[in-house]
Length: 267
Image (cartoon, rainbow, N blue to C red):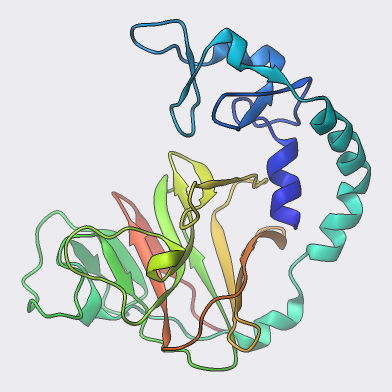
C-alpha cells in the first residue's frame, strides 16, 4: 500500500509531488508544467515518457482531476503512513550472515575473498562452466537457501546506478539472457540510471525513495509468502511482494552492471 501511495503522488519527471497532475498516453502521470520538459520523439511532436518511451501527442495528455483530489488526501495521511510502515527493529534479530555463492556467479563477476563484495570484473574469470552458474547475465546467488522461517539481510549498493537485489526460485533459468519477472521466479527491486523500480513487475513499478538509497534491507517471511524492502538509512518501507509461491527453496539474488555490491556482515 505504501509504495502505491508514493507512486501516485510523485511526478516521474521532477520527482516532486504532482502539481496539476496530467496523464500521458501510456498511463504514467506527471506535472502539467513538466510536460514541456519531456524529450520529443525523433521525427514528430510527441512527448516521450521517460519510463516507457511511449509517445504522447498533445491531445493524448489529459488532466487527472480525481488524482489531484486524491493527492491532497494522501499528503494529509503521509506522516501517519510513514510511521506505521517504518522498518521494525525486531527484524534485525532475523539477520543472516550473507555471502555470495561463487558456484553460481557469472564468470564476468569478481568475488572478494570473504565472499561479501561483488563487482564487474575487468577480465573473464576462469571458473568451471556448470548448470548452476549464470552463463552470461551478470548475476550471482547468495549461499543461503530458504525453505521456512523469517530472514533479513542488507546490501550496500553505494552510488550504483544499475542493480537488482532480492530473492529468486532455485530453478530459475541461468543460461543466456535472464528476464527479471515474478512469473519466472524473480522478485526484485532495482535501480535503472538512479531511478528505483520494482523491477520484476510488468510494467516496471516506479518507486519513490528519499533520501537516496545506499543500503537496502530485505526481509523475507516464508510463512507469510512475502518479501519487503527498506531504506536502511531511515528505515522507510520501499516495496513488498506478496503471494510468493514457496514450492521450492528461495535464494538471495544479486544483479549488477559496472558497479560493486557489498553484503553486510550480520552483527
